Amino acid sequence: MAALVALAVGLLRAADLDVPVGRLSVGQCRRLALGILVALVILSIGIVGVLRAFSSSTLTCKAAESHSNMALLAQQVAGELERQAELETGDLSGTFGPDFPDYTWEADVQQAAEANLYRAEIRVVHTGGDRRKFYRLFTCLRKESQEASSDTPPSPGPPPGPEGPG
Image (cartoon, rainbow, N blue to C red; front, side):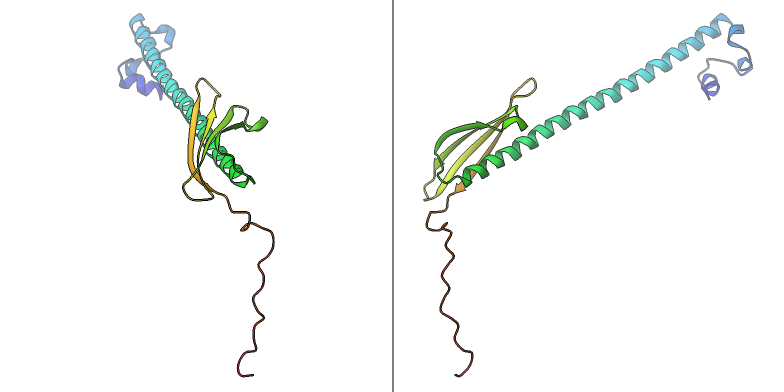
């Protein structure tokens, strides 16, 4: 295969294919060495391209993972705020513990015009790596009134009457 390539690009003559490399003329050895050098340069350019593509895909995957984590953590904070018995208004902040040490959250919770409705802006910050990344979630939280959320089951209606004429 290599011999056919050497013939095709003019590095060797057909008569020189059976001649050992040590018996080739100086000019033929130089052309052969030049052909090998060009092949190595082309191969190295291809390898560098593959390595750069792999590196780029790894960085993109890490960025996507960080963004997904921030979105899920923001939803987790919103759920925890909504489950609180008394929702605090104003600026709140916290961490996610040892599971997510590079992530923190901040929330600005304000009472909306409607009763039991709160407007919340939740910011999750990822400080890992060389820069800080932010994710913002805007949501409304509804707190049920104490009367509506009591644990007493609704009282049953009157017992059903007999069907048909009685």
